[in-house]
Amino acid sequence: MTNDLLTWFHRLKRDLPWRKNRNPYRVWLSEVMLQQTQVATVIPYFERWLERFPTISDLAQASFDEVLKSWEGLGYYRRAKNLHRAAQKVAFELEGRFPETYEAWLELPGIGPYSAAAISSIVNGERVVAVDGNVKRVASRLFLLKGEPQEALVRENLSPYLPETCPGDFNEAMMELGATLCKKQTPACLYCPLTSHCLAYQQGKTADYPEAKKKTKRPHYEKYALIDIQDGKIWLRQRSETEMLNGLWGFVLVDDVNDEVKRLERVTHAYTHFSLGVTPVLEKASNSDGEYIPLENLDTLALSTLDRKIL
Image (spheres, rainbow, N blue to C red):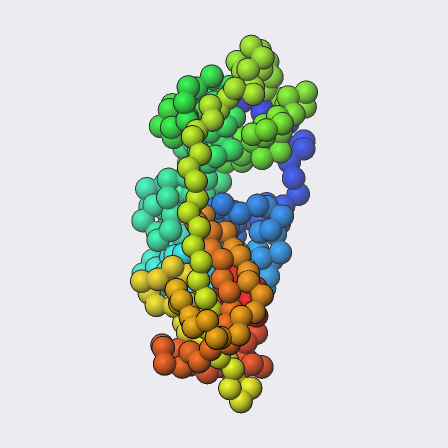
């Protein structure tokens, strides 16, 4: 199975910017950006990021506001915060030396088991299986794994096939296979290099794996955004350390307003675990935390996608 997978990967792998001029910083950055974000979305962010922060030292010395501004629009902003903290740890505490093992990568902020395995296998050549959603789906079909595939079980089934050399290529190939061919709804089995090894394909059960998990209804909330513009300035607040989207600037949100206020066009935004509808209203906001920002300076601030929609 390993030879079939790697032959396919080396022949048909996608031409992606993080697969060129590889070093620990570029690999680590790409893995963080790709968490819960599509490849097509990440590519321009990855390239712009490296123009702004070409080295780990550049990133470590940047202000958090600069980092957030460069991340703006990519979502899941905790990734940016952890990336910045991890860069400072590598640059200042580790004197520029990147981790050399799976366990050491896990000690960096924002690095979990999947990212540590992917990075260490690619950068350090460490023989460890990287398990993300794509890999779980491929493994569930290959081995007919019941229920929602658990990381430990997937690792157990794939470890015998992980090569001594180029384990990173194996991990990338598995992820590539899941992303491009072994898709959730319409797997392209006719083009798959592993059909002779795939139990689900051989038994005509690819549509049954992985077994669907029960969907939970995502809650929805409604808020009002206070739009307070005075003398060419607009009132915004920077979210605190304890809030979601911490560090980002945005409008003051409230649960209720007077009936007399002027309402503007409502906007909606979906987050991972809930959705939010926001109706902008022309109302004084300067009694709350925040400050008046000159309108011409808005492009220098890191705002959430929702707040950009309101603007």
